[in-house]
Length: 214
Image (cartoon, rainbow, N blue to C red; front, side, top):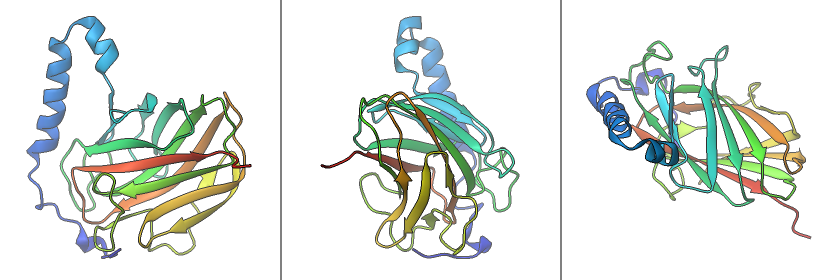
């Protein structure tokens, strides 16, 4: 994928209003819905300059916090109910701005921490993440989205349950954690940096727990 310098950001590529308008519409619809519908349908968690949704199914978000800096990462707490891939939908909710202050602007620098509860009934022996700018399509060379591709020796990739990781950038942007295990009803934590140098309002993070094949 293309890795432009910080100048590759665009603060004028998108107007500043759609993110706010989208969030306002979501909250307005929830406010008008019956109480039981809100409890059943509210799947969007907003924190920092982004929102996170489990709307594509297969898992449940139970918490979100942080602004996306190294000292205050975006922390997403989830429960996965099967050992099949699930997709987290991420949207910007505030204006995009080069070098903008984290939490007030979507600046394309997202330090992440995911706390994932294994409620699948099966042990996971690997766990893979994949970034997609377009749903169900591999992240391509020129989209600017990656797991911090230009950093060849990252020191911010870590898991509580896996000792090693691999990164692949072409033709996919994938991060695989390996050499470990997550037993049923246990929680694994994953930390990494996502960068997006040509920001879009919406992108996706596919999460794929792996089980033994034998």
